[in-house]
Image (cartoon, rainbow, N blue to C red; front, side):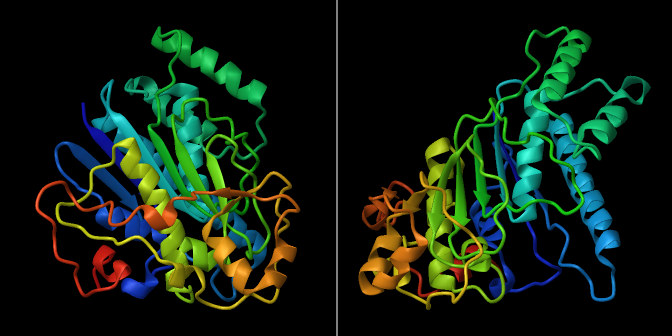
Length: 334
């Protein structure tokens, strides 16, 4: 039995430690070995100047389909029963990770390549061009069960880690939130972001202070803020069994990180009344009471022990010295 880690990033064709997203930073910490295979997709960038909106939507949707198909084919090549699958994604890449999880719940891992059946399944059911309902996917699952001879073709996903998932332009709704095969997961959502996509009820969803870039991580982010959701999603992955590179260090964020940056002047998101808000936001609210206006009337604080985690990524054994570099410099090569 081995681990298989797949990451859908959104680098926007930029490089350097300050261009990394939180998904990329997390992936850089993950061990790659015969005991833990890894797969990484850099993702598509932003809309190019001069490209009309319709063309861009079509291009973005096709790029996402290609990413999910390539990830699925990787699993076809390396997955065996009992392997633990871990999926990570950021922004539109988070939607790709969810789509792959849904595909695994619907048809499992299809090893049969006869008569181009696998090509047909991927072309038809990966980010379908027309809207599919839960009943549609149930019919596909029954067909897969009949063709494979397995009563339940679903393949489990051990952990689904997402950073501020946004919808893929040009992709039809596909009921990707129905993920009964996901054992555990965490979704970090930006309080001060733009238009919010779909809620993801299949995993633990927690709201963090900052704009999309401050939760997803990318150029323009407030890096102390970005490290807080990175720490939370990574903590869930470690608890779920992800192996990290030997000697890697990522000290947990402090109260100073929670107070970093300023309040974004405008937020297009309205938090659900039952939203769970990360406990780091409480520190900021105490210093900036006007921020209460962006939060639900009754707040459930999540991850109350975030300051007490300490350096929980230090391997057991002799303690390691704290490196002088920043957490992100440790996670991402220049």
